[in-house]
Image (cartoon, rainbow, N blue to C red; front, top):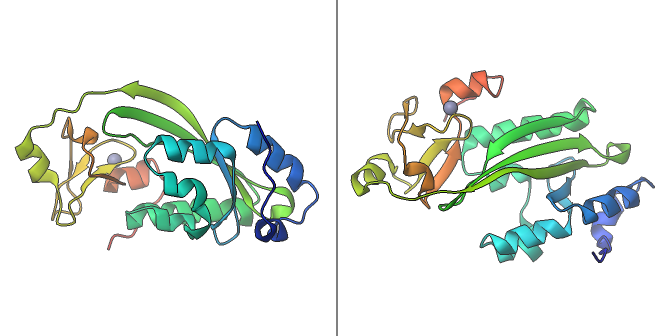
Length: 207
Ligand SMILES: [Zn+2]
């Protein structure tokens, strides 16, 4: 694999002399990996990031990652924005790694990933690696009336990232088991009221 040079702007933030070795290791890593600054904006992405973006219908992210802004802005649901902001920022403030397993499926492929975040050299950035845990094909056959019933006013079906239950539109605390909906293209990931405490460790404020 050809190693790419860090752009000048990003190198400016990563002055610790150990960073080149870290970046060389990330560049050879087959999983998507990147470095976040203290404001959780991307300072660097590895080659596998671009490959994953192109293979999953998001070619603009392969080259346009510098314009994405802080990582929490990539996430639709406010609950999860707060969760990732707190946990990732905590790796720098507490100088400790953090791991999290989550589902990120497409309409026809079930995928589970393991995120591992660690403070980088000099605590100048957070090194994040997303490893693929499982990838399985799946069928897509939900009845139309069920899709309509669970699609909210924004046109989204909100599914809990931890337990897979689906949010009932207009009822913020009602989450139900609705088989088949998880393969819809308008799925958005959220976190249900039970899992926010059980799996994620704290109750999240709801809008
Ligand atoms: Zn849940």
